[in-house]
Image 1: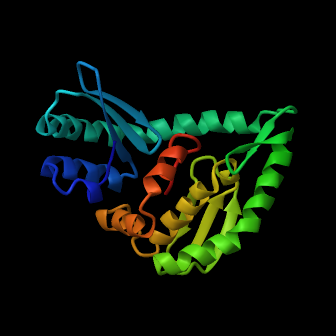
Image 2: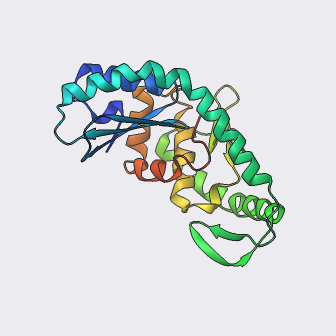
Length: 225
């Protein structure tokens, strides 16, 4: 299960505080109950994964997570840097026989790296007008400018002052709903510049099933800013 401030209204205040601190640092919390003896933590780009024993109480879980929050925030920058270097090496390698995904479906042809970039840019540019026309009225805001960029550490970003949204050209590799989620996420930043509880509530109101697409993108290229 994934936890965020809007879906733990009945959980312990200690857990709420932990999630809030992580959210302010750009880190999502994902908790899974398993047949394990101890609480296990794994820090990934923009995500803290926690495995907890089935028998653990909510209070014990909250206390364990709260104790690890400073560690996660302190080490997150290093995790991002390591992943950025790894992703950069992958994306810059020359691959002549490279199968391509379009909107999550494998295509019957191959492209090298440069051809793939150009193809994804073209495909994303083609759907952007209709997707923004769909979601801007739902979110209740309008972006002044939309740009595409070859980003290795983010799926999207938002300049709230200029009301400018950037999207990663790698998005067309995933189901189109993932691109829609990134658009919703960045549009919601025009209401809330941070990742506060109010921000996530705005995302949830606009796109109730956002967590499915958020999870699909998590840990692929780095997540959202």
